[in-house]
Image (cartoon, rainbow, N blue to C red; front, side, top):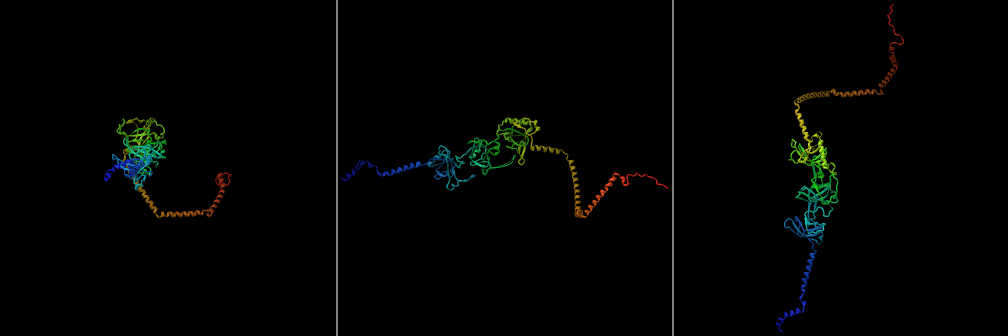
Amino acid sequence: MSDASRVDDAPERDLHRAKASPQARFSPIWIVPIVAILIGAWLVYDNYRSRGPQVTLVMSNAEGIEAGSTLIKTRNVEVGRVERVNLSEDLSTAVITARMSPDSDAMLVEDSRFWVVKPRVGREGISGLGTVLSGAFIQLEPGSSDTASREFEVSDKPPVAPAGAAGLRINLVSQLGNSLRVGDPVTYQGYTVGRVEDATFDAQTRRMQHRVFIEAPYDTLVTDSTRFWSASGIDLRLDSEGFRVNVESFEALLGGGVTFGVPEDLPLGRQVEADVTFNLYPDEDSARQGTFNRYLEYVLLVDDSVRGLSRGAPVEFRGVRVGTVAAVPWNFNAPQPEGRSGFSIPVLVRIEPQRLGIENQEIQLDEWRERFDRLFGLGLRASLKSGNLLTGALFVDLNFQRDLADQHVAETFAEKTVFPTTSGGFALIEAQVTDLLAKLNGLEIEPLLAGLDRNLAASEAMLGEVRALSASLQGMLEDPATREVPGNLNATLQELQATLQGLSPDSTAYQELTTAVGRLERLMRDLQPVARTLSDNPRALLFDSLDTEDPQPRAPRRD
């Protein structure tokens, strides 16, 4: 066979040979790519199986967040990493896509919280210093809910209290626009017992809504009688009740806060449940005032000046506070009652029976109104008096004017009962001073001045005589003879002392005097019979015998 025929028959031989042995179709060279494909598929499957869930985090500002490097941690353990950082469709927020670890499904529930940890300097101190070198990271606090979630909001600040912390969360409602901020302390008698968690403004009600967390075991201090008020750090007041200074904690002194307590006039009350709402008062006095919710309203028509009388001033009865000034002035444009000659300033006051220690009893306002109507007929009147001479602050004083008891006429002003008033305080003093000046003007001054001139002239003459007498005394005191008087007096006293020493019991003169006295005594004893005889018969001094007859006068004999 030729070479050409062998070449032409080669393909047929190969085809025949392939049909004869089917195993020759699978070449061993295909084993390597097949194994590589299987290994790759296994790696892809294993990688997909080992990947954790993907979460979407929304925050207002992505400062410090970097894709591929920023970590997500829980208790300083890495549980995820940021993959992408994008803007939202409306460009209002930053959207972060993060990949979590495979075992983090249990932590991704609807009440889990995320926040950015970075260096901060605040009233609580310095925090996040560990991120200065490592960079900011996102902190995850697992929640306790059973509902899973894959989208969360990231806060720029750490939460005030952990989600599972023991305590009480309540709501505070106030009209204080910027009085509280998130993180401000909540104090009780100066001790910090909680924090402000949230502060939002409700545009519909135009009021501030505050969320407050009270730590356990201090949550038992919050009862239905508790009152909350703003703590401004230093409360300095100078009003009709005097000068007062109230200082809260040092933290509240720097940034403010809120404090609470139970007023002295109220019982402790019962412990409240979570999410209850309280009013937040601007100060402690306002909080105390809020407890007096049962009151009578009256209008004072004041004829005197109301300068110094302000809202919140006390209404007192003989020093006991029984009410509060509600408005100065009140409803100024309302018509005055008929029969009044002048224009009076209307002042709205509240009579609060709860201030009298009967807050635990049921108060019947109708009975109190009838009681005051009877007291008006007995002379009860209101007047303005000065409570502080330094500031000029006034208060309303209630007292009885017995001379006005029969002059009360019931009046109303803007559909409210008028509380009868009388002038008092500086107005009364002014009237008295005016009367005094009128009396002084009626006095005849010229005769009084003439008499005063005469008295002054007499006083001047008397002063001249006093001066002359003083000069004479001065000359006498300066005379040498007068100066020798003390020496002569001393010499005389010395001589008298020597004389008295000569009369001592041991001296001769004293003994002679004693002897003479003894002789005189004996002589007196001897003379006692003679004296007794003369006392009985005075003739014994002339006649030797008392029995002789009286002699007869006879003429001499003449021889």
